[in-house]
Amino acid sequence: MSRAVLSLGSNLGDRLGRLRSVVTGLGEAVVRVSTVYETKPWGVEDQPDFLNAVCIVDDPARDHWAWLRAGQALEQAAGRVRELRWGPRTLDVDVVTVDGVRSADPELLLPHPGTPERASVLIPWLEIDPDATLPGHGPVRDLLAALPEADRAGVRPRRDLAL
Ligand SMILES: Nc1ncnc2c1ncn2[C@@H]1O[C@H](COP(=O)(O)OP(=O)(O)OP(=O)(O)O)[C@@H](O)[C@H]1O
Ligand SMILES: Nc1nc2c(c(=O)[nH]1)N=C(CO)CN2
Image 1: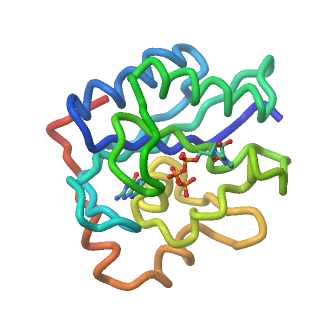
Image 2: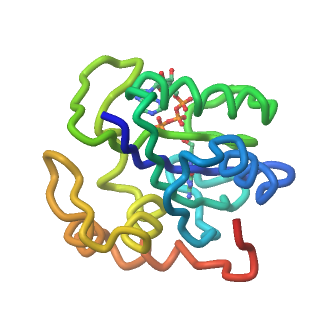
């Protein structure tokens, strides 16, 4: 119950600083962090490009709710105001999966239901875990291969922006 995959996103203000605040805030729980990617917005397309990254975290003291709360606390600390679904935001932390946990609770859906369609999550996740599988959906590399080429092309590594 302690290992989780988190996706991080920001498209307002100091985008890199916001992503860094998550890695710093989660401290020793962070096991692996992807490259930062510059990504075309999905959902609401008329908004600035995002920076996205994925990290794997592990902490025996935290269950899935604790990962959600940790992400929400970091969003609050980044001054997040939620105005529009899929709209611009200073920081978004989604819980993609937690090992061994499936949840249909709307407050914490696991795995996160948007994952199969989001190249901005699948590409960084695959980078740090090439054999990753999304429970109920199969290998992440197959999910990525099934997406339109345009979606994959909209996710570009920014190797100049390390977390
Ligand atoms: N796996 C999850 N990770 C993070 N939040 C979740 C998850 N499942 C459900 N939620 C709920 O979703 C709400 C947050 O929605 P939010 O405003 O971040 O949505 P969004 O980022 O616009 O859309 P999406 O969730 O599709 O990325 C919170 O109330 C939270 O409880
Ligand atoms: N590329 C990309 N697009 C998005 C993102 C995101 O993190 N990356 N988050 C959104 C908010 O839910 C809406 N659209």
